[in-house]
Length: 242
Image 1 (cartoon, helix red, strand yellow):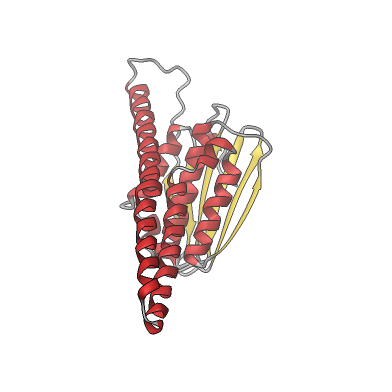
Image 2 (cartoon, helix red, strand yellow; image 1 turned 60 degrees about the horizontal axis):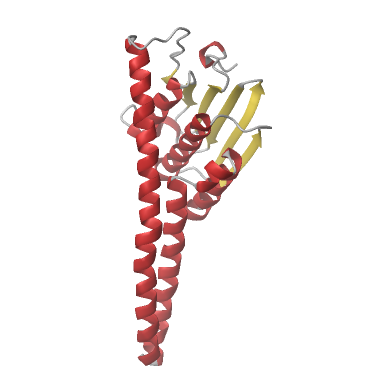
């Protein structure tokens, strides 16, 4: 059973300001840029404001601990541990929203950071392999990061998978393959439903780059997402998976 999330080419060899297709792509670029800025702002707010609130709670908790009976201290210690775990989770999520490591060090360190966080939260075994010698354009890095982020989030929420494989490699010069494969329930889940706005948005972002995004799977036998992304202006539609 195969499901196509998108195989249409959006390459345009002769864009012009008056071309409706060019205007649509330009509008989508602006929307994506605005969304990335919004994610950065939310992440910063989570890190700063929520962090301050949790720090204040820890101070109050420490003061209560000093005057508490020994039996109460046991419960306060449990609360303290839960607050510390929550603080760590919020810090991780705030960085994942728009990780500085993506801007500063590139895609591979950012994906490692993302996958490490998902392993801790989901207890899913996630294997990540990458064969990428050079940095790719920032817009491509962002698109791949968002694809993996959305796919792993959906796997965690819907697929009931225990294992996930994430692969990123340059199959040919200027052509990247990003594959996410799980051993979950396949298309019995809403993971790749057309109503799933997360992956639809990722698909549109990839199509803007001339990429393709396909999903293949069978009920009860897992699902595979494959994105084929040109990084030198080539059209991925001409390089379908074999």
